[in-house]
Length: 373
Image (tube, rainbow, N blue to C red; front, side):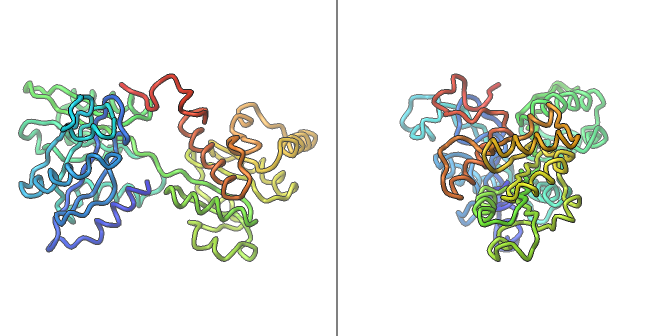
């Protein structure tokens, strides 16, 4: 999400009278690759680019091809095959051992239907998961649609642009299947005239949101790390008690009395880190009423268990489902000591939980790092 925001910011500062631009998007990955589907790079005709589609091995070649696409005002789909044992093959030096398809789309700057404008509209709306359909394979045109066009899916009615009920139903069914798995990938559909339509179906969830409930000095390194990786940080504390530096790092600072005004969804993690037993005990039942998928509690296990016991004695039982959401002590076991290391431990565990991973060392993993088709 941080990269996407940087691309949109750079795009907003382009002068269409002086600069041409294109967007490069990874739309298919077979095998291993440093970046996955949905990775993007904004390319300008002066050779500057923002973002990335690989670990650095493909960007130079993609820049040349993107500038050619700009000159022709036509999108192109480029395949990089790094599985071949050929020293002249782009990407072999990285040892990717995969096949990557990259769509290069020239941008008509300011056109509300260009891909970056559509992405920008998604970023400015209320937090939700967006579904984007990009045509990556189509001979000639179909119902005024062509390769490079992006359609924002907002429901079955938004598929009317395809003009074919059977095609729309097939796309709708595929979107549902992909959404259930939370994966972005291409799909091919047959047209009534015998041609094939290939669409990159992208599932774009909102940025991860951390709600940090506390005002002590260890909130600052955690908020800083959250900002660095492109997540959103909201601090719940008395504004008069927080460090001045925190105001420039956090996306929002909310008083405890305004907690209910925070938009909390299944992409939100809440950390209880007030360092005050009574405060964390008071806040726990309140945060468990939200949709947050992750609730972390700072401090040793005995402290958390004492909070659970006292709440039970007061008639506030914590269900098994809620206990699965609670991570106490919060963080992964990496031997963290300093506030900065503890912040790293917490963020790493949140990423693992939201990715449905264990947080174990990759060298112990017996299957590919990323799920493959």
